[in-house]
Length: 409
Length: 230
Image 1 (cartoon, rainbow over the protein chains, first blue to last red):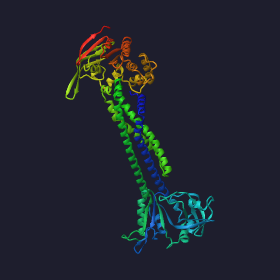
Image 2 (image 1 turned 120 degrees about the horizontal axis):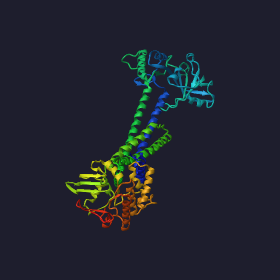
Image 3 (image 1 turned 90 degrees about the horizontal axis):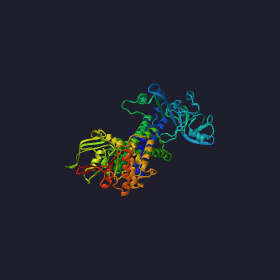
Image 4 (image 1 turned 60 degrees about the horizontal axis):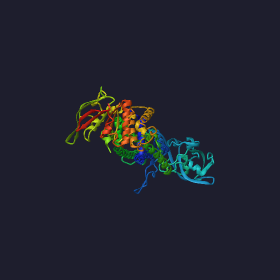
């Protein structure tokens, strides 16, 4: 039979009497809670940023690059040796069971002209599968067909950046642009994708049928050569299988002996990015954990002040005991006092933490995501800290001898 | 049945290796409605005795029956409940809560026995009225004179309708005139409300208000005299 409202009232009064002390004690909790919330918000924002980038390059994506050439011992780097072909592309789709879709990619940078505007951009010759592999949507128009690829139709899809630079407000569909002086009809506009992981503008792109890129725009050392093959695995679990199957298949197709090195490279972008996301998540949890240490330090501050308070108010405790306060009446009074300190501190901490994260994302242009779960968690944790560190002083107070306490000066 | 029935109680304090005997086998009966003064020099054991009958302390040996129940077998919280409902304390140093209004000081004992806020307020008001402090309810204890503070303490002792008030030198910090007023208040409570008053005092004229004077020396009762007021 504990009287909670009056115990609360007593606690509030005790805290009001020593305003400065209460405020400083709360500061520990305020800093702790706001640090936990801000750290987790910044960390989660970073994870989200990476997750968005993963989504933007397309999920379960493998990229196959040709191997490096070496001229007199000078190795020229990945992609310099033309080894991949349209045949490889088709074989992968046909023979690797873990692969969902494949798109070849052959192109380069070229000047594009529309009317009196011109713009240099990346031209990619590919097949309609490219949009599926890279999970790219159309903003308007249509994709070129297999037929148009086969026949080498001079049609193109424009990225948003190209549209902005060449057309401004004009609807580009049906217009003619010149790429390397070859006229192309614009049949579609790609949906904006934003920046890639490296900060490159993914929308600064033109897609054309691969046959046109090979024969008319960029040429090939031999017919059917492609620069890159984009592969979409059936699922993220299938990625390692797909990688193994492709490697096996291409070694076979390129007639590479058991002791020879691959003349191509398979890159698992999704895995790389997921690893980055994972490490980002671990980092943010680590930051949160470090921040919660300050919450515990704040709790020790509360305990310290509560111990001082119990000593100062020994006489008051004696009076309360003399008029009939039981063990738990006294204990609860001090626990509630500690809890009040920590919860008010927690609330102010939430306000500062949330506000601080928002300011951070505005000024540092860094996305922050405040998860309500973490806010509630931080608040509950501050309450737990209050109860935990308030208990010992309260326990000490409740064990005082009433006679000694009454005589205490 | 006596209100207070003390049988052969002793109290021994252990101070390091030395044990000090504060009370030597005291037996005493106090009936309901008595007005008793306990006198004796410092260190005579009267305060120890008062703490024991006030359920603030337990005897080393012997039996203490308060209102028929054996206090020796009770735990800390049960003793607190007896102090809350059956005993009102008045101290020499008033022992009011600082920075707290007279009203809230008087409400204090009722915080610990589940009285509703509304009833607490009403009872505290009427208790303050009965000690003549009407209109001072909102004053803080440090805004009141010594006599007024002691009245607040008496009001606090009365508020749970305790049958007995234990007063440890209630006039020790008060001047003669105020002392007389407090003693008249006790006399009135004893006569009108049949509240048992037990007080410790050094002064013969204060003891003179009582109807029974018990004298202590060296932990023993040396004199138990029914006074002229009977």
